[in-house]
Length: 185
Length: 109
Image 1 (cartoon, chains in turn green, cyan):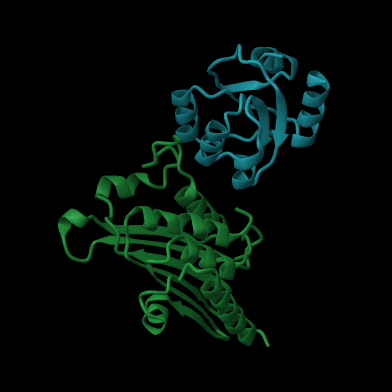
Image 2 (cartoon, chains in turn green, cyan; image 1 turned 180 degrees about the vertical axis):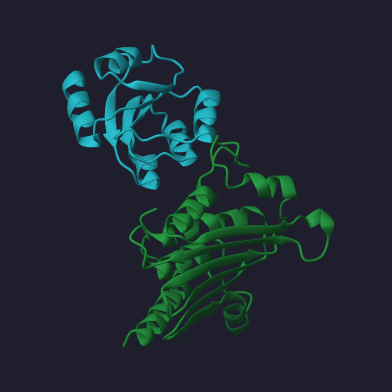
């Protein structure tokens, strides 16, 4: 991927397909140029054998094509910068606390690191596509934090307003843009 | 032009072979796998310097006729095993991607 945000969009779809109701996308940047991307969902999870196989590109749960490249690309992107990749999952059959956590760490100062890209658009696309999921987006940087909590928005707007409506999405876009511009005055 | 004719014309070293009677329609060059995935035309020869297992997945997804690893790029044993299991036409050559594409272009013109 030329931009990490496109990869994140792809990875988030895995959580959607896993029937998650809560999906947290966290980006944590430190002063030294390390970026940790972590996505946490409460979807149906995977057994240990599946977890072992998901970063193999020839493994996919889709029946429409033979290969799945979201996680392999994320892993390759992170490892190419000298970073790391990990995945943890608990299947629904094992009860409480099921879901999946994927973590990828990038050294953004490495020559092979791709830029983060347009996270505002990524968040808007995800919200528009799946307005009923409780998305939580947090991007924390040394200069401050950008945050969007879909559950909080829903409680303000009321259940009858879909977060996928154009006016709501436009507002969210402006709201995120505003937060980002306050980080880089 | 068939894969086996291309292999012989460019003196490619075989890493893995499947259907070498396959007809080539064109070529593509690139190392950014996600980009190649969406753009490499089916039945074409893809030239790259990348050598991890994702290359095989992208070649398979894009239905490339063959992959040529430029500049004597060597994949590891796991990648070779996977290429053989998938029956992919995978070659390597000491030529740079530029030289390979130039020769390929002339052969297909």
